[in-house]
Length: 315
Image (cartoon, rainbow, N blue to C red; front, side, top):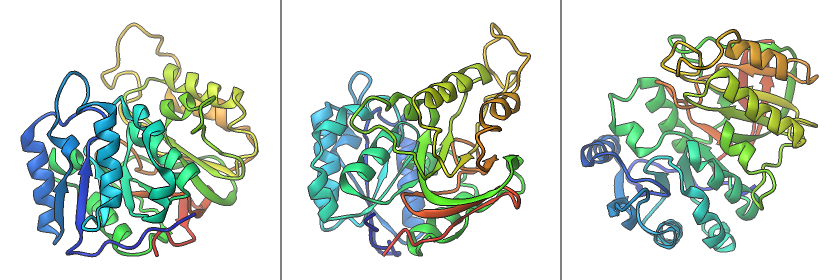
């Protein structure tokens, strides 16, 4: 895998909108101010100024904007504005060989999962499952989120993935210890890549997934799909991140059966894979998101309830 250069204060963060636009101008301005307060410059791409229908401009405009950010010598790292449906339209339009020649830190989550998978498979690029610009501007940024993001892009990304003592409980679904490259992203997007050119490659890997606002029934559907597509066969281990707002009673609709919890589903579907499975590290859509490098070697130790990144994510 290609490791992009580190991003020190004074560098420029390029921002692109890969799918749906930001909700308000204020949240964008606050996100920019957050970066500037930590010594960075921000360059907003053309796609961040577009708003029409469901998307921030045409797929061609959004893809060209992302390609231009990789090519721009003034831009040192790229952060997505937000997730949002529509990212898949960009994938056939990108020049992955050119991106591989000019690797840069790329940060995003949710629907941006598709880009993480495509950049890994066709550009061989290490990328970062981390907060979007709107997450940095929509609320006071939790210290753990900020510290992890900055330390990851300024350092080499190695070491333990932080645990938030005030966040979700971390528990072992299946005990053991295993190593492999981290691959994954948002659960429904991972399952929907099967049968596509950017289909997730999980054999020998630590498979990571998270999602927000999916009840146990919906989580189980996608885990079953991954299993039946063969994506749970041969994995070294499974890291389930934060499944924020996914229990019945957390705002989900009243018209579904409530007998089974998320824990019940995960235990039933992942507990007998014969590999270590860990659940609850704060990687995902929750209040405190810690940045996770993708494509690098890591060790999942379910016995000690932790994940350690073993090889540098940055050059």
